[in-house]
Structure formats: structure tokens, C-alpha cells
Length: 321
View (cartoon, rainbow, N blue to C red):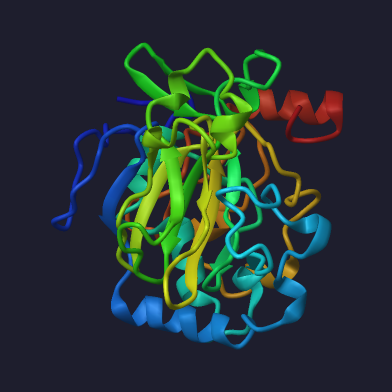
């Protein structure tokens, strides 16, 4: 079987390799997929430790993410911390973060939910919540507040194939126990045709619909950004940390951090598969390399016919139209 890009493909449905247990829909969130090993999580945390106390990483004042005095506002003082840039950190620190771009256990699921030739859409982020930190009011969702279709985040299931315009992969670096807070999602909302009421987004009503899974450090959560989701205030005794990566199909883009190119430090020392994930959006048939199952090598598409390439160069002064 070959897809539109000319790659040989296979279905990733029902995969649970390596003893993993998953839920097979991005609207419910695929959880329980362990992608980390202790050494990777420890290395990630050690690198973040050096930067986590930077006061410039904390969201204060008009950068806060919740309504004052609301159920998601925590102690009303402590803000969320955002740490980024780790794909370009020094050699010896950056490698475990880069591995998530093309992790051998994640690849079959990303291929199934986004498509072969997937690309990194947003600058990856580490979200950190100190005890008492606020959460984040619910966002995303399939429907805008005015009732229109939120197509940039769209989820679809057509002709037996799932596609997400924006897929999030969250990797917790710390354990999350029940009733501590953290990631929360409204399961099934990726198929909704109605906007979430403001009171639901603020977690003031309908709280029974919020699902906050128990997580172990090194797990992964895969969910469509078309699913209404947010973050509960953090009640744990230690800092909570989660990495967020967002991936799009080869022809789609929401963020523009890639324009005109990702930071040069990201490319230094990357393997071929990781570099393929950093490509800008364009169709697979235009010589787009795709991540191979091993997370190291790439799959080459069927080459364009030479006479078409020659013609394009004459007309457009470029190999590609």
C-alpha cells in the first residue's frame, strides 16, 4: 500500500508495542504509552533544573492564564513557568528532548493520527507548576466561541482514516497522582459541533466532564488540539513538569516558528529523522523525506519525473512550483 506521497505505508491501529496500553482515539487522549526511560527523564530534569528558577519564566500579571479567584487560579499568586529552547541546548543536554521528535514508540501513532511526513508545528515547551500554581483555562476545541468550525485544529475521520491538523504530544517529567491537578481534557469534545460554555472553560460548571489522568514520568499523552483541554491548579507537593510537542500533517501549519527556518542550533548534531520533522510545510510528493520507524533514518518518496522537474526549472526557475 502506498499513500499520496509515494511511501510504502501500514496501519498503526491497535499498536501497543513494548507492553504499552493505549486508548485508540485522539479525542479521548491516548494515554499510558511509555516513551521515556529513567535515564532520559533524569537527564531532561537535570537540564531543566538549571533554568527552572529563572524569574523570567514565570507568568505574572497580564500573562496569567486564569480568572482571578476562579477554581483554576491556584493560590492566586504563583504563576505557571514556561521553559523553551531545549532542542538547541548544548550537546549533552539536548539529545533526550530531541528524541521525542522521532521516538520509535511514538512514530506509529503520529503516523496514524497525523500522517507520514509529519512535521513539528510549534516550538516545544516545558510547562512547570510549583505547588499552588494556577492552571490554564480550557482552550482548543472543535468549535469557536461564535459557533464556527475551528478548522485549523480540525479532527476528521474520513474513508477509514484519522487526521488531525494539530496533534499534541505531552510527556510528563514528574509523576501526577489523582486529585493533584495538572492536565485535564473533555473526552470526546473533538467531535462536538457546539462551543464550550465559558463557565465550563473556567471549570465553574460541568466539572464532571473533566478527565485528569494519573501519569508516570516518561509516559506520553497524545491528544487532538480539537479536543477541549486545559490545566488544573497544582496541588502536588513538588513541582510538576510536562513537555509539550505539537505536530501537523506535512502540508499544514498553525505556528510560524519555522519561518524561515528553525534556530540554527537545533540542527547541529540531529539525525536524518529529526531533521525531517523540522521541514516546513509542503506536499510529500515534492521530495519530502519522512521519518522511518527506527526514528533515525528516513523514508524517501517516489522521485518526481525528471521531465517535470526540468519543466518547472524552466518556468519557475526552481525545481518546485
